[in-house]
Image (cartoon, rainbow, N blue to C red; front, side, top):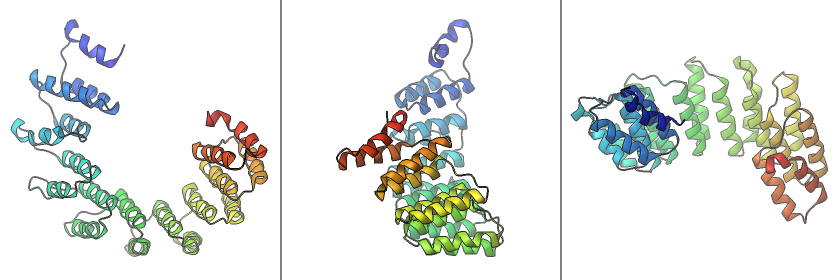
Amino acid sequence: MSAAKLFDEMPQKGIKCDVITYNVLINGLSSLSRWKAVEVLWKEMVHCNIYPNVITFSTVIDALCRMDEARKVFNSLPGKGIIPCSISYGILINGYFIEMKIDEAMHLFSHKGLEPDVSTYTTVLQGLFRLRKCSTALQIFDEMQAAGHKPDFYTYCVMLDGLCGNGLVERALSLLDELEKKELNVCIHYYSIVMNGLCKAEKLDSARALLADLPSKGLEPDVITYNTLINGCCEKGLLEEAKDILLEMEQSRCLPNGVTYNIILRGTLKSGEFNEATEFLDMMVRRGFSSDLSTSELLLSLFQKKEHNPTLFNMIKKCAPITC
């Protein structure tokens, strides 16, 4: 029996639906992208005089962020005796950024009824970086700290990723340096983000140096860190170095995962070393890994371009469960 059918039968069995029941169903419908059903359920809830709470409004706003109704719901909160919380503001602000409506997002962010917290600031920073408004993001980041809000782990991840993603890798390195000088809890994930930025900016030497410097900072590279540098090497055609890093991983007891093997396999295929790629695929399979979608698509593309190369065909057959 579906949740919706069970919900419909509740009144017939003398069971009254409360705000929690509606919240659960609204959340479920939202996860299924059934926006019209959410809207109908919302109106039914109001009609039945069931008093929505902050969770209800936040869920409905999140569901309707692709619709003009979202702002109407938000504006109706004070009239129902509910003061919008920072979560509700954040959801709507994020919706505006997704729709690339920067002015609306920033206007709501400066609303006198909002007392922004770290999460709200982080949402704004992420939206600004996504739309390449880096100078504004840096200004908001400074304002956030001046207002006494300490950036958390996720805020710093957004800052570092946003700077690197917009080509401001040197600024990301400066921020990383600031974190170290403040003796804040600098984790390996921050370095992985910056290393990825360096690799994409074709600054592989700097990425290597950052990896080599980790032990002096009391940090050990994890599988994401290694995968980042391996991918950077493969993108530059440095397959032997990528394999050396794989060996270093294994020797340092950082077990490679399926992502690691697929990165190297794709690099080997792109270099045209099909026999070597076959051997590597066999080794992957022996270790319990298989090709992912990107690798399978690359194999099919190469097979079409290389006049149905038999080596590639045999590899495709080995990957058949994935490609099909």
